[in-house]
Figure 1 (cartoon, rainbow over the protein chains, first blue to last red):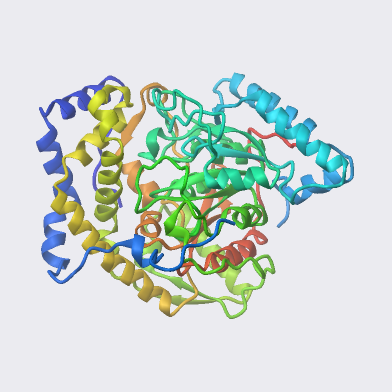
Figure 2 (cartoon, rainbow over the protein chains, first blue to last red):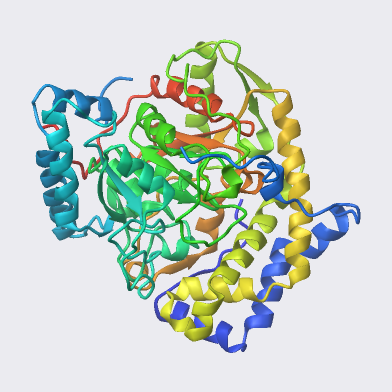
Length: 71
Length: 474
């Protein structure tokens, strides 16, 4: 079920936070996270150029309709 | 429903009407209990802030109304807690940080204003995972909220204090916020009921803006009936939140009938079985109990499940990074270390990835809508496991635990990405006595279907009394 096993607390977690923010391991960590999530593979396999971004904001609630009244 | 039961709004209302107790006595009892629970080792830490004078003022006003026989509503005199991500007049909104909320709010969020207008006693602001970015409830600034069923364990999060407050009996209902499972996960781990309504059903006005496209407010309660009572008050259009304007009227009738005749439950094995054996077994047993009440079960497949997690990570992560951009620009180190890591990683995601995630999100929405087309609701566990232990070090510094994060959020993300309503209801306990939650997801705007199923399930479950508990009517 769980693919990644990173578990940190205490001094190690603080140290990693500082390193990530300083840029020392930021790009590498991002690459690791992206690879673990398999984003490139997902984009390649599933995304069609005709897919429009889903805008839940307009899909579930059409704000062009008449403005509601406060209950 | 047999055995232990959480005290309910209607029981309190009966006690007020019959003169057995009154809102002032209840408010005092709660303030004393919170102090006692927080003085224990380890402390419960359900609340971040309580203004005693403010609480007693509301209680006294309610007491007067009850003495006159003129309560404002069923919620008059009912103690309700508010997650510290939601503005409440007179309190700062810290969002679980050490530095936000230096000034008390001068306005209520819409949901809080509606509860106040109904006569509720707003008993304080509850603890939460810092900025809602995690789901354990381990907060290095305010201390972790602890699970009333085992104080050595997490509540889940991010609405950790709200779930702890309800499960420990301090109030029948609390408000939570859910961007990736933050109402359902702590409710599930703490053995209470939690409702994430449809996106746009409940006004977000006055909630700290963290993750606009996946954020929802909703109730956490000891029972489905109490969940419904508060949902009834907070749901509906609000001229301060355009996302609420075009919703159909919510349905409140027939929910507590207990019948599941003609109800078809959708089970997606690929989705359902992604949990520990004990959790899966308890949830399977629940399905059988629902079938005994008249429901039918149908196996379904859900297209797009494989990319729910990366799409949710990108969506909520990038939106939170954007929401907190100015605060991070000033000083990143004011956040807890786990928050710092996650916000930095999210900040480094290219804009193209965020847009592509939204493109795939459309497919996830279509996949869930298609699965729901042939059934009334989808059912699954709420979390992949029960409450995890809190290490002494994590309690002080926070923790980053990817495996735990994945297990706790296995079933929750989809309802945030799709905007669909989902409720969790307790269905049993593992060998260690830790609660197991069952999630029911309904079509958009059909909270009534999810709550109707939850109410029926609730009657089949023997609840257990939490270790840390106060009976407000004892």
